[in-house]
Image (cartoon, rainbow, N blue to C red; front, side, top):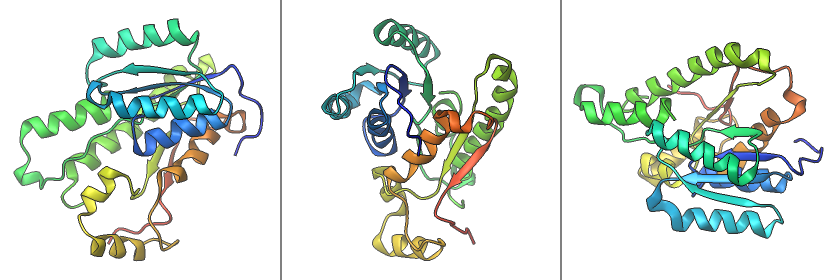
Length: 223
C-alpha cells in the first residue's frame, strides 16, 4: 500500500454511500486524500455518514448527489466538485447495479439500466457480465486516448464481495458457503479488500501501469 503523503490531493468516488464505495472513500481519507463522495439522491443519509467518517479522519469531505446514468448530471457534478474541492486527482467509477435475470427473460429496460449505470457512468448475470466486459474494453481504449497527458486508466474486477448487493445476489448462507469453497483463499471478499488495490492504482507506484484490469477475487474459480 502506498506510504507517501497525499495531503492536498483529491479523490472522487461514485456510489460511496455504502459497501465498496464507502470503504474506498474512507481508505482514500486514511491515505491522506480529501474525498468527493457521490451517490443517488435517495442515499443522501448514508452518503452523509460516509462524509462524516472522512471528516473524523481529519480530511475534507465534499458530498454531492449524482445519478451516473445522466450525462448532464455528470457534467454539472464534475464542475461543482472542482469548484468545491479545487481539483480532482483520482476518479473511482464505483457505482453499479445488478438485477439477476436469465438472458431469455431479460427485458429492454433492465438491459438498458445496466448499461446506463455500469458502462456509461454467470448464469443469471449475462447482462451484468456483458457490461463489465465493456468496461474493461473502455478502460483499454481510454488509457490509449489519455496516456499522452500522463493519465493512467485501470479497472478493478472484484470477485464476490459481501456487500448488501452481494449478499442479496447470493440469497442464502448455503450459497455463501458454496462460493467460499470455490476460492483459493476459502473466503469471500469484504469491501476493505478492494481498498489496497485501488490505492495502488492511484499511487506513483503504478505510474507505468495503464489499460489493465486486475482481478481482486480471492482466486475464485467459476465452474
